[in-house]
Amino acid sequence: MTYRFAAAAFGAALLASGPLSAQTVTGAGASFPFPVYAKWAEAYKAATGVTVNYQSIGSGGGIRQIQARTVDFGATDAPLKGDELQKGGLVQFPTVLGGVVPVVNIAGIEAGQIKLTGEVLAEIFRGGVRKWSDPKIAALNPGAKLPDANITPVYRSDASGTTAIFTTYLSESEAAFKTELGSNTTIDWPVGQGGKGNEGVAATVKQVANAIGYVEYAYAKQNKLAYTQLRNKDGRFVSPDAESFSAAAAGANWTSQPGFGISLTSQPGATSWPITAPTFVLIPKDAKDPAKTAEVIKFFDWAFKSGGKLATDLDYVALPEKTVADVRMMAFKDAKTN
Image 1 (cartoon, rainbow, N blue to C red):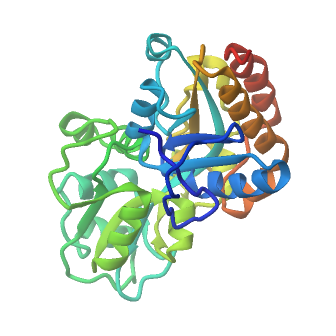
Image 2: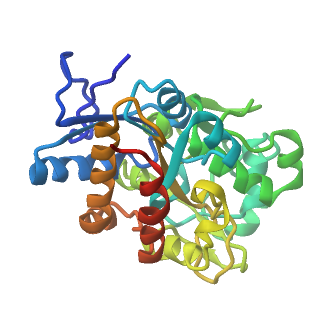
């Protein structure tokens, strides 16, 4: 099944079906980068006339569709390992950096007013801390007017790279979470309720009083959700923004893993956001239609050259110049486009 998605329309409306032209490429996958991919697609079409249709269906769906070759590129926040890339005949590369942020819906609480640690956050999502008035939360927030109300954790109901990033961080933060739930794109959550995509989690948190969820930062801002501060590896409480995401990536060794598949959770640094993450694109190494793969590469190469401000405007962080050079030299040249 070929998906036709109006990437320029943030609301994600499906286009009428019909034959795809040579000037159209299709992608599907992670909701984490959807806001920036939509902006890039809109600007790219204005500049080149080429349409990039991207459907936000979650990382698991994006991986499945590129493996089945029903789209021209897939997108995932949970990078595939080297053996998975080889088995699937895929090339993987990062496109942009962002941050996963806890968001809450507590009456009278605004963005950045609540402080949490990774340990307490892990306890909330495994059901160990159940009320906002719990002494562990109160100790981190002296003077805050927290209700004596049950916490409703909100999680991703679909296979999600955002969940993989979030649960990696929680597993690094608390041994009990790692033992009981672990890290993966899907988790058998013991408490709370699910939402599909970053969009669904944001909407559910907004609707449910005393909820807490996790979304990519752009979704928190666009939905006017109150994010929490988090204590980072250096023991500092920090807020999410482009600077704290950049700080977390400052010492990253991108070529240390196949397909650039590094993790940026729990990075050192006084200003580092502890749930920073890159997001990745998957393309065929030997495509049935090499011209389409060439168009995908042209799109992301354009984004590296011209899409930095659009990414910054949405609070994503562009890749370092050295990493972009490595992507061009390694990933782009690995894909057969003629």
